[in-house]
Image (cartoon, rainbow, N blue to C red; front, top):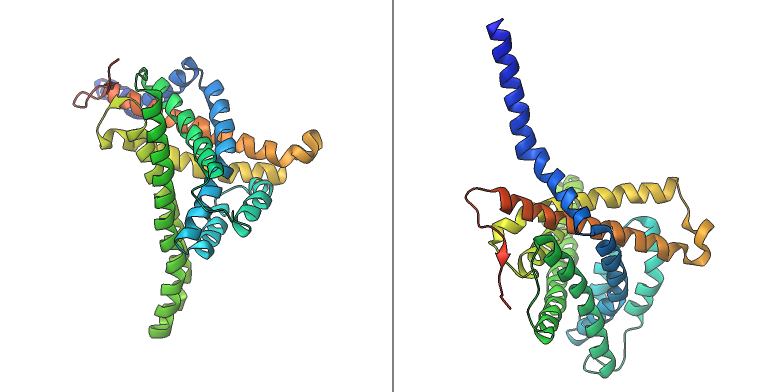
Length: 303
């Protein structure tokens, strides 16, 4: 009897430990998400993403024209659309394709391009607002300083995309060259494609990680921003797959919204993306707040 009770007690302790380590942080993150009006913020971010998406692509295309990589950008856009739900990609593709195939002729240094950069940086501000709210900090930094940082993220994002472009576009070329030298590796084509898409997922993880670490007004180490980034990346890939199946098999937004159905579907996808992004930040805060040997999240700049 004592042995049975001891085993039962040990099981209870193990369950409590499992709850404390694995389940409780996620539960606290969800509660904080709703306490911080996460749904409302997600709607704002979704609108900001949709508003900033096309200006950013316009900037990217103009920049690629300056460095002679227009064709590579087209390759990258085709690769990026593979990650989106089919219906979302179908709604966005005509506009994106028109921007990519008919780039602005006036060059990058124009008043219209300055406006484009401003709108693109506004999307960064939407993400910053959500992150500051998740960490429970104020944002005393001057408006112009925040905008400069937002522009820095736009340029940095463009630079990162060009690095990924090299990996995506040069990869198949290197593969074909390798086939001519070592023909028997042709059977490894599937593995090569897996690695190629793995690079895309790793790039997404890196972007989210940098946003969590650099955007909010919080003192934290790089390692503190990593758990939420991993959670957000894995959740986004899962939700993108499930949402694609849902759009294909269950619903049709055009029945309710007519010609705007595709845009509504894309906006809903960005809404789910924003929810995941905010929850990842909330998870980072919870883990920082509960860790015994980690820094507690505090404001990096005081008013």
